[in-house]
Image 1 (cartoon, rainbow, N blue to C red):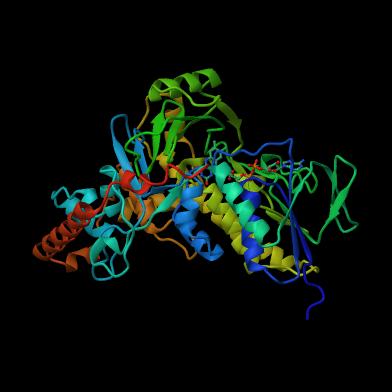
Image 2 (cartoon, rainbow, N blue to C red):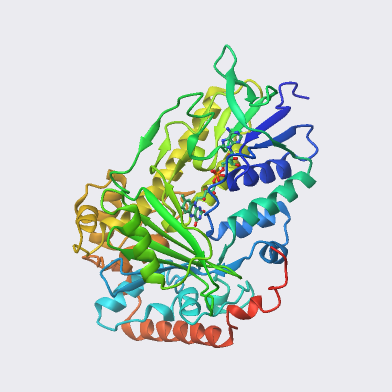
Length: 501
Ligand SMILES: Cc1cc2nc3c(=O)[nH]c(=O)nc-3n(C[C@H](O)[C@H](O)[C@H](O)COP(=O)(O)OP(=O)(O)OC[C@H]3O[C@@H](n4cnc5c(N)ncnc54)[C@H](O)[C@@H]3O)c2cc1C
């Protein structure tokens, strides 16, 4: 037996990131003789606004052995088939980033090349004929995927909307059942050992907690990774200028759309997230271009509904810690950095940070090469997501406000500039293994924002026009048939209203 095994883990923070981390670690290390403590302050609240997710959330629940239906019942959950983006390309125009498949490969070529070929031939193919998720979404319908079914039903994917506070409560209960110890105390500071590692958390009541491994889930303040270890922060505001948000709930919208809406505004955008018994709304904006009060007024006027709670203002700086893991401390969630919520990626990145930690699980020697490998992989992941979000802004046609003119003309990271150039020239999107957003996701944003490649993949010419028309027609029929058979999204929540929050 390895006597250098990690015997104790202290997780600082009981927000979504803290309880996601505790749940995953408790599940993975169950019966390994390692104690896990989650420290949450009774005086310092959580951000609590993360309500939209992406499809890997269903894998997370499966890994934990949590019944999805039970989770949905207790978290006000609804289904999400993608994100709808009104007014991003120009006011009055809407595009989709749906989940799931888009047509299917023909002769090993991704379908989007044939879609572009059909467009170039002037056939005006309909996007929703090939994306079951957006077709369902536009009609407020939902169905589960079926791996055995023919056509697009097998390739359907979905995520969840939920109440972040209820999720933290649910996962808290899950993790404590697996032996995780919650500790309601406020940390005043952390002490360090001679080698610079964190030695103990010191509480305001004079007590302390020592551990082998510390997970910093303390939110934007990064109490361990930044305030104690001073790892530094890389600021990405020049590419993603939104740095504020105001959020409040309104009454349930009926029908509840099975998608997140991200509506572009003059200096940012507004989300609308339907839950079972309320709707979450927020305005993400650039403080250099819009005052707080004007942002709130704009959200109120767009919604035309009464807030059910006081509006909450939030400030953030888009970017990342220079190191996610330093010594014996790993930062997860907002403590590790923040990308604005346009593509609902934060909770996923927290999960990914822990999955990666499990892949790099240390012993008490904390081998530096292992830590470097972890940091390299996590940095690549967050930079990939950053580029994807920047594309939504920089490829706009909008020039109607100073904010949009800035976004349209800013110099983007080289990694993104290369991707845009490749697509513009050839319609090709090359993704690397492990990247979160597939070529399809990139295609949706390129196409949605009206970027048309100069050339069509020559390999599409192998399929002659008559055959291609036949294939497109067949796919459209399969999508239409699946759409007709799908129940309304609301019908899934008819009997759930009685579940206590
Ligand atoms: C406007 C906005 C919208 C968002 N929307 C989405 C979305 O749609 N989808 C998505 O995936 N993500 C979204 N996010 C991100 C998401 O909210 C966060 O990733 C998630 O809530 C995790 O937060 P956290 O747990 O890291 O931090 P927090 O929620 O801030 O939790 C911090 C915890 O640390 C504890 N703590 C802090 N200091 C101390 C101390 N001194 N002693 C003891 N305890 C302490 C606090 O008590 C708290 O429990 C959004 C974020 C913002 C700002």
